Length: 168
Image 1 (tube, rainbow, N blue to C red):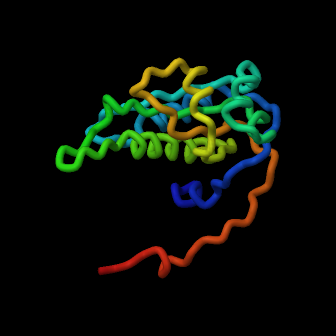
Image 2: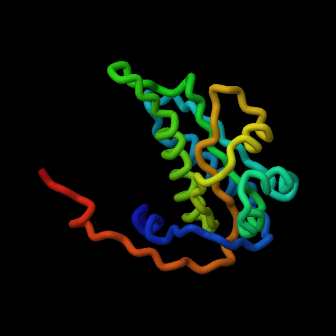
Image 3: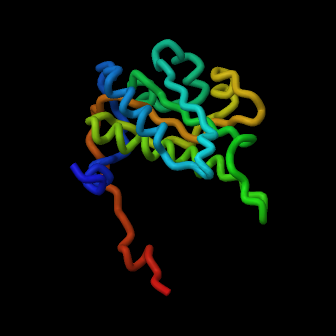
């Protein structure tokens, strides 16, 4: 399958079976994250693989959708703002950008392996920060449940390329 095929196949999964994710597949997903490009290759991130059942009580304070807890794993990508590259001319720290690229690699590899994911930025970060015992310089950027899908894709409209691309 081509990369574009994987991208077209990916959808936000909002329903999972209780089948466990094989360690071999999880390791491939984590490898995809490891090789993600980051500013000056700082790799200023940490990936947390959270056992959903073991941490369900705390995770209910993080996000409240029933389908979120169906997946056996929740992956959190946490950015380290002290270690991420910062542009010298305007002080822009790219930790969030790097973490997003990492999550994209995770999600695309999971799709390639037949697993379902859903980008989640709408979560309460304080209980997650407590669960992960993060220092002040680190913040969770994105979450995804990870598991075998038990839900069909919902239709999503896309703007035309003419609406999205400008040639100058």
